[in-house]
Length: 494
Image (cartoon, rainbow, N blue to C red):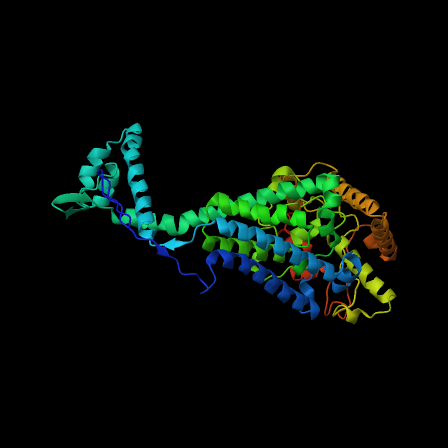
């Protein structure tokens, strides 16, 4: 039992008794449930996306086809599953260590904490008369005039002297909080402070992951030793989100989230929401779908399409930000600046389908549709598109533009990293040689107007049937132009 007597003119703080907090799930302490929920959420959400993949339920929203997963990735699904489980074991052991250091959760102090916030508000009001005096306003005079009609405003103007809110206790008048103070204190305690904790935790995780992630791409030893494993997935899928080297998984994901939890002073119940939400966001960022009804893909511009660019051989040194915002990419100039990427995606899709044909399989064995000559973008995705519309040109020129040649430089640096990694792994430059040959072959097969950089429109209604081009898959038929910013997560011209 804690007693708090009033020692000054401030309202006294209430007494309280602490009792053990009942766990959310009977028999499982909250601090251990916090470790279980993210793993359950990971495999549940990944399982949903795996079923969508298996039964080809939403082919129109795919970023890549199953044929690409089959032919472009350089790691088996079993290896991915194994390494994810290893990371989750390490994550759980670390969490158990933190849980042992945590005191048992208690309840009974909430009213005291609310009263403490109300007291802080009362103390802060003492500065108001002086602030008003700077502007020549007599706060005391205003307080006297408003006291009869609005004692709360009068008390605020007088610096927190609420003479109307007192009660008799043991023969003396004891100060009480004004109703608005208690309402504001409850709002702070129950909503604003937790929201601030979540916001700061998001900033910590984003900052931690950006600089470690970028460092692993800038340092060749770090990349080849640790991070290159994650990039064996050129075509990400949901349960490969945590496919990492165990050391990278611990430092990048587990340690970063743990620091955010400790530094923000979250309770175990708050951390349940934060860790589980972060896990779901990471899975969704690797799901391989641009789903128009997926709220996680519209909370921020850092979504599955945005991160997928980072997994391509031409964008691997861009779009480092994870998992919440794109802030650091935009501030430090590492966001992809190459514009529309639909031509590259479409070529990769068609090439993968042809490899499946070459292996003697039919397209229906890996996807519910066949490759088509859909509406293609110009084959030079780094080249700025000209426009004859004066208004569009003016609007384009008014936007911040990346430095000349930056997009090409980004792509070349990305390809250099792939070359270096493959050489160190004994694989040579085979991946990039294949990509280059495929692009040149497809270019020769295209009509002259497409080779010259103009769009080719499809006239066959049968070709536009079950599965349109990647542009329509991602944007629901409007093309990467117009919906690129929301679906792929970058803005044209940036």
